[in-house]
Image (cartoon, rainbow, N blue to C red; front, side):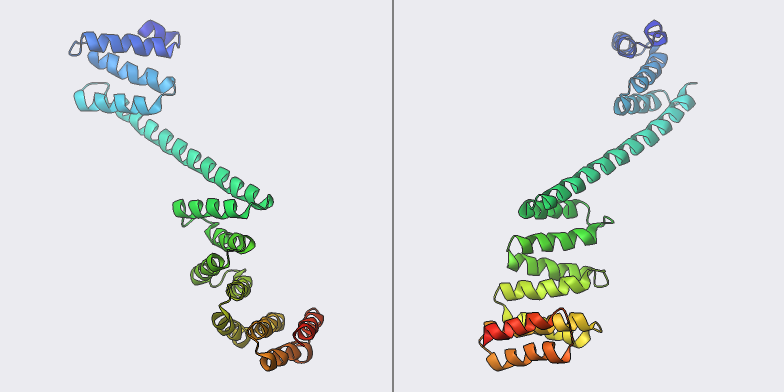
Length: 251
């Protein structure tokens, strides 16, 4: 065992020490052989096995002269194994995020949503959790699963009301409700946006969507008033022609 150890032939050294320990489990060389086997296992990169061997040594020979060295080796192994575990977890997380991005870039929205959902189940407090919840909702929306998209946008807004994408999420939630023919819910949300926002463009977009809600329900007078308020009152250059186009379609 010692000869193989000196030659750095770790597996042969482990086999020799193991043979000795099985043949003479209570022999006078058993403590040295057990400690040396742990060292050989550590050198061979078999860290969990080495930790088990050193733990066995401490349990069997707590007062042996090699016990302090064994404890020190255990401490080192524990740190190394913890570091390896964290590194492996980081690599796994990075791969999962890369897979999600690949699905999104490939317009495979159902797969992206499912992968992001699995990620959030495993890493609910990850630094990118908020962005992933928004992504899950957006993927459901793009896949035209509007009922699910609405539920996800609500979850996102409930958990991250101050997120930079909160305003976008509110608009997408309203549109998801409209697409799902839940016009009363959509109208309540859009009216709240108009009431609460200080952004004239956000208010104009919400008013335009309210007009679309009214049109879908055949509320022609209300829709006309909404569209005209976008064109006249909101003074939104970008949305003015859109509002007039929707008004013409309604007429």
